[in-house]
Length: 211
Image 1: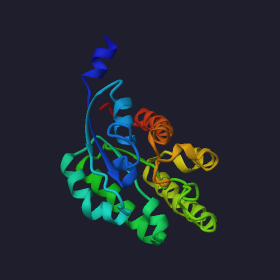
Image 2: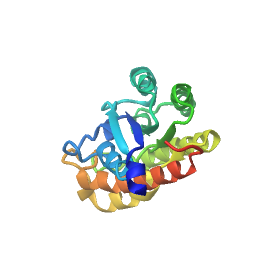
Image 3: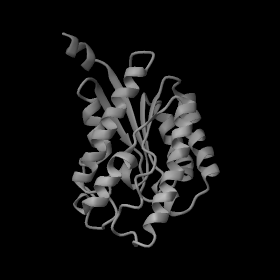
């Protein structure tokens, strides 16, 4: 009976971000968008809209994806962005402004929206990154993710710590990367999905009202 009641609840789920949001490196249905939608679907009916675009920096998420996301009036949002800002040396201040624009724009459309952030994955891990640059990429990842942590705390968002929890594994075992030696493959995305699923469970448990 309880399961039937839960399944009657509908979640309008929007995924925003870069190539990791789009699932580059894995087959259709094997990325984090489909994986997390499946997890949400265990207890609710889910409509998934994936707006992720390969190569997008967080500022481009604001200009290219936020208007479409706002039009959906989403209940739940995953923002998977930050990696391209690490590699393109976007200023932390500019990233913070863009992140706040996204959060405030989504909340204007739905004050109860649940937002989960990935921050940047560990950009010192991909084998395609020259080994001399990996320490710099790892340092930039940590700097960017400190900003995500700060904004998440200030705004009451949930951060899924994919860099912290998967970075050591990905550095040690390159079989989690796709043939391009940069993006995760299906196994790599599965690792991230498990981290994200826990984050969604935490975020939804804290939500003050029922979807």
